[in-house]
Every structure is written in C-alpha cells, then in structure tokens.
Image (cartoon, rainbow, N blue to C red; front, side, top):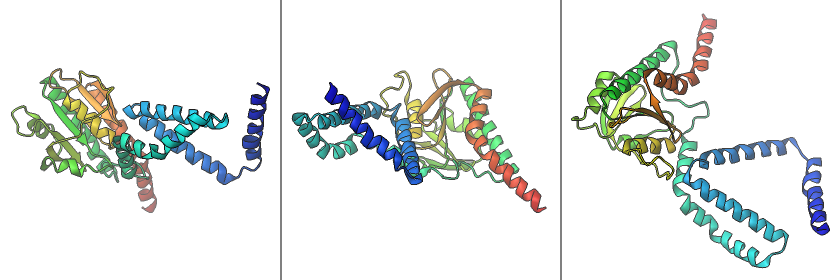
Length: 290
C-alpha cells in the first residue's frame, strides 16, 4: 500500500507540480481549446447511440492505462493489439456520427448562424412576416389534422435533399403551404424546404434518424425531422396527421405540443434573436453617417 501511495505522490509531483511551474500563456490557450473540443464532442454524442460506444472506449482506455502502470502484461498486450486496429474500427462504427459532426462543423458560419440575410429593419420585418405565415399554416393544418413537414434551411445547405423534390420558388403563405400539404396533392407526402425566405422545393425526401432512443410512437415525418436536424442546423416544423400535434425539431431534438403562439415564440428565438444585434449595429452606423 505504501508503494502505491509513493508512486502516486511521485507521479503527482512529476506530472502536475513540475508542469504548473513551467506553464505558459500558450499552454493555457492550448488547454482551453482542447476543453472546447472535448465539450463539443461530449455534447454531440451525449444523446446519440454513439454515446454508449464512446463510454465503452473510455473504459477500455482506463484499463489500458492501469495495465501500463501496474505492468499487467497480458492485458497490456491485448489492448496494444486492440488499438492497432481500433482506429479503423472506430471510423467504421461511428461513420454516421462522424459524418454528421463534420457536416455541422463545415456548415457552421463563424459569424453566426444564418438562414435569411438580415441586413435591415425591412428584411427583419419580412422575416417576422414569414414566421407568422409558417405559424398560421401550421395552426390551420393542425386544426384540420393535415400532416406537414416544413424545413427551414439555415447555414447548412440542403441542396442534395432539394434535388429529390420539385422546385416551387414561391412566397411563404398559408395558402401555398396548405395547398402543398393537402392530402390529395401530389407533393403532400414529402418535406417542403424553405430557403432565403421562399418556399424553395416540395416533395423532398429526408434522411430518417437512426437514433434508437426515439419514441417508438413517432412516425416517419417526425423521424425525418429529427434526422435532418442531426446532420444540419435546419429548423423543422412537423404537424401530425393522426393527432394534429405541432412539433419542432432542432439539433436532433424534438419538442412537441406547440400552438400558434408558442411556435412563433420558439421560431423567433431561433431565427430572429441571433440577428437583432447585427441589425441594431447597422442602423447605428447608417445614422452616424447621416
């Protein structure tokens, strides 16, 4: 027991105290960046199927570390051979999650998420009108129990899914959306994608979520809504054909039981609020110039 305590005491002095003495500003920056990366990875896999596999890998890493410290040759040999092929195995097992993570990182704007360019109060008012039309449409469809799947594209482009549907290029209005999702309409089964403040395409096919923890009672529309938000920053509104329930999906999570008022509040917080400081700054610059 004394030998073990001495081992940890010497290790603490060597790897912690000596390191703290020589720490630099760049070392602190290095730690902060690494912490952000680890936090992002944890947040990404926490609610996904890959999270359970990740914890398994953590356990294996801890056992490998302990086998190295206490010279457990059999375990050490097994884990060394495991890690020789483990990297390739991880790429194969985590392929869907890695793809989703890279797509999100590649599609994220460093100046903030954007779905519709908000450069003036006029465009901000236009965005508010579009949100109002979407909420009114969802409310009307919910009342009549007409199924709907409305995708609002933000910074992650959804071109490959738009190509699977039919180009519409129409203004956003309750009349247009009700006609698209009318149960006899040819495009009512697919998703309608909104891009740059217009109904860009309809009848689009979306990827279904592979998350095993999703409620089994959810239908194809809800799984598609979760699926597209797992690999993009899109915001998706779903209206259930069976119950008329309005749901909203974002970042792989589904919120349910919205009405006109609460849906509008949620969309404003997701789509309008991030741009308001930008609009105010531009107005101030214009006022100063005048």
